[in-house]
Length: 279
Image (tube, rainbow, N blue to C red; front, side, top):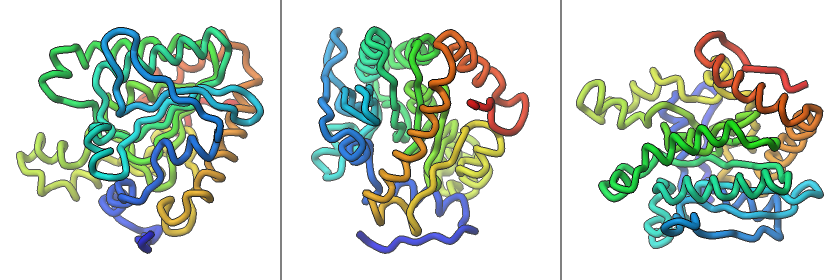
C-alpha cells in the first residue's frame, strides 16, 4: 500500500481524498475481520438484489450480529457490479429485510456507511429510490434492537442516511459525512465542480467538525497515516469502539433506545455537541 500520509492540520479536501483512497478498507474488509463466519444474504424478496449493499449475519463479540455495509468494490469489474457503492431501491429494501430479521431474533445491528450517494439514474428513479430511502429512514427509527452506524469512508447525502439512522453514529478519523459530496455542492452553488476544494471546507464534513456539531457521537481513531496503511489495525480499532458502545447501549431497554434514537436526530441543529450520553 502506498504511503499516503496527511498531517493533523490537513485541509478538508485532503481528508476527502483520504476517505476515497483506493486502498482504504471497505465494508467487507471490516466484516470479515470482525465476524469471520459471516454469511451474506441476498435479495429484497421483492424485485432483486443490490450488490452495492452487503447484508448478512455473523458471530461478533460472542453473539449473532446483523451486518449491513455499503460496498464499493476493489477492482474495476467489481466496482461496476457494485455500482461504486451507490444503492438502488432494492438495496434499501434488502436493508429493511435484514433489520426486520434482526428485530425478530433480537440481533444487534452494525451498519457500515460508505457511499457518495444513492444512485441517481433513471431506473432507480422509476423504481422509487426516494420513497425507498424515506421508508428505510422511517423503519430504522422503529427497529427495537441496539443499532450502531459507522461512517467508514464517504457518507453522502440520503444515500448514507438511508442506512445511517442509529442509536450511535460513529465516524472514522479520516472519513467524511455530508449533505452532498463537494463536487455536487460546487456544481449546485457555483455551477462549477472546480470549486470542490472550497466546498469541502465550507461543508464541514470532517470528523472533528461533525463531532463538534453533534452529528456524530464518537470518532474512531485510525492507524498513523490512515486506515489504508493497516487494515488489521483499523479493524481492531473499530472492534474496540463497537464493543464499548454496544456495552453502553445494553444498559437501556428497547423502548428507551427507540425514544433516545428519535430524540438524537430531533436535536440535530438545535444544539452543538454529542446528541446524548449513552452512559
